[in-house]
Length: 138
Picture 1 (cartoon, one colour):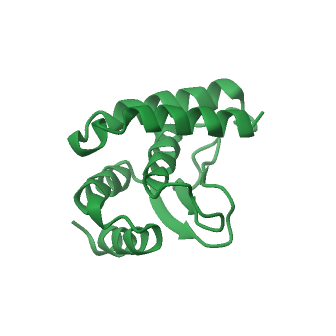
Picture 2 (cartoon, rainbow, N blue to C red):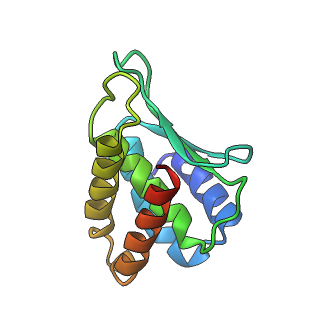
């Protein structure tokens, strides 16, 4: 486990009140790091996002938005999985913010969620959060 992963893990846990999910967050962050992506907390960002170059000219970077409080702390994990889904779906084409690309990122995030037994009990919440986020982005 590298120091950057440890540092961001502690920051996410502290900022998101996610002590209960410490091991899960560490494993997710390690997967993101292994995929050659960086991640940070953004206290001025209303939403989470990923920066990716369509020509792969720079390392992808996920920003987890903490400006707007989440209804539930676990929603931060859902944001992380969704942005990781964007990374795993490949490079964007053009602007990249299409409804299809968003849906694909949520689907991939869902597949990632199923890898973590401590999150499986929360599948219904993931689906509700996805629906809420999808409605807000239309």
